[in-house]
Amino acid sequence: MTEVPDAGGDKRTVKQERALRTRAVLVRAAAEVFSEAGFAGASVAKIAERAGLTLGAMYFHFRNKDALAREIVRMQPGRVSVPLESVGLQRAVDITLAWAYQMRDDPLLLAGARLVMDQEQFIPPEENSHGQWSDVLAEELAEAAGRRELRASVDVSVLARLLVNACTGAQMHSQMESGRVDLPDRIVETWRFLLPAVAVPSAVRRIELGEARGRAL
Image (cartoon, rainbow, N blue to C red):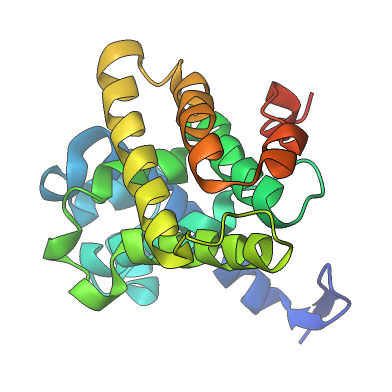
């Protein structure tokens, strides 16, 4: 069977490549449907129709809409692309800003925002999306603590959860009030309020909150 190299230099068969493309099409179609209709309003028939595929193709890759919803939720952190290199506290800031800018037009992130309200229907509690985002931020905040950017009294895990809660709330209110247009501004406001309370003064002065930190210009 014909083999083609992938971006990493490994070889995949044409059949494998076709299957990966089909799976990606299904995930994107499901994201669009979930974003528009929510988990309850989505159906495998709607998703297959949006993808331009048969139900058979749908069920070959995903056993039901629950599996598709879980896939989309678990993909969330990997969808965020930070445009500039950074470490520690600046990296935590950059992740939230990049998320805020990309949330406005990335169908998978938009679907994740809609699905987070219904996740108890298809994801066990120990795998909730808040937990995965807290883990992402806690890793960067632990690095910040190691670099002595945070005040000694700061509990990294608590701060990570607080940031996730703040971002989730900002996203919900921004969606209702501006269609998420002002979401990046709300995240900047959150950091401006939090930084003096959690970071040492020298670190606060170094942190950048401009648009370039979250979106490639």
